[in-house]
Image (tube, rainbow, N blue to C red; front, side, top):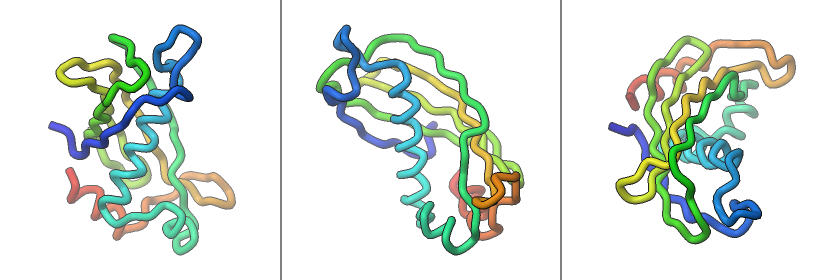
Length: 134
């Protein structure tokens, strides 16, 4: 069961010459859904960077593509937290059109100091919020 569902419409800019969503755009869709998930929890990334000096970065990702999305499709990006560590979060994310799963990915996000880009613990209040959202 997803922790968060974000609706998305496919636009011209999302498609390639074949008229389907360009494969790399699923990573953008997943990124936007994670950002909106954080926002829904009351965590604004710019405010977090300004107040705590930390940012989240993608550490690793894998995506499996099952079926194409096309112009004007209404999608759902489903996000599920798989694991939370002191400085990272592992997500499973999927793009769905109705009852058909189009793409599935695993994304590991790390927390880093915004000036050094060295790993640092997720600030305690944010970590507690993320853990409670599971």
